Image 1 (cartoon, rainbow, N blue to C red):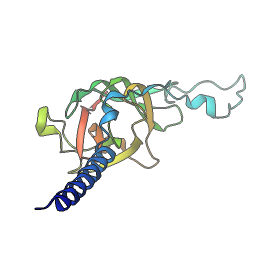
Image 2: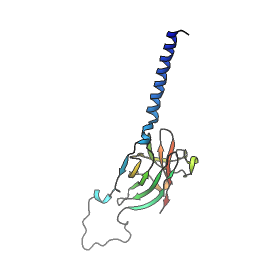
Image 3: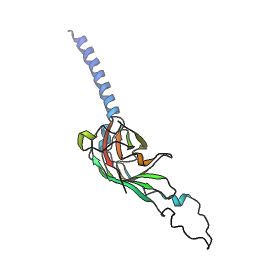
Image 4: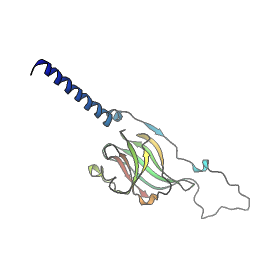
Length: 186
């Protein structure tokens, strides 16, 4: 092989290697593993958004009325799957009857395209639990707001939370769970 052909081959291979490297960086986003996003949200207060109803002295509170304030209806502890994940999760019924999923003390790795899923899949330890959450029924509550801290995710109207038994921090890019929690009803 002559010298000019070797230079062309080397240049061509360099272009291919750079293209593959560029694609890999865009697809995997390895820098996200070292970038933390901390979120500190308070539990939403439905009372702050609704209009107060005036009462008269003759009205007395009903004993069958829903308890005032948010009520935790299910909770669980996060376990690690693909990445080390800790913290707790609560499903909270707000005063107005809506439900919010809340992470408290969340600590996991950041990653590409992380989602919060409410699922009907069982939570399994280790590698056996990495890929089970897209096998059954699930509802995506949106993108993970941050990989650390306390955060809330409103359940869409019409979602029957009691049909779901677990929560997963799901990487949609690679179809793998970063961590999950079994929801125990309270």
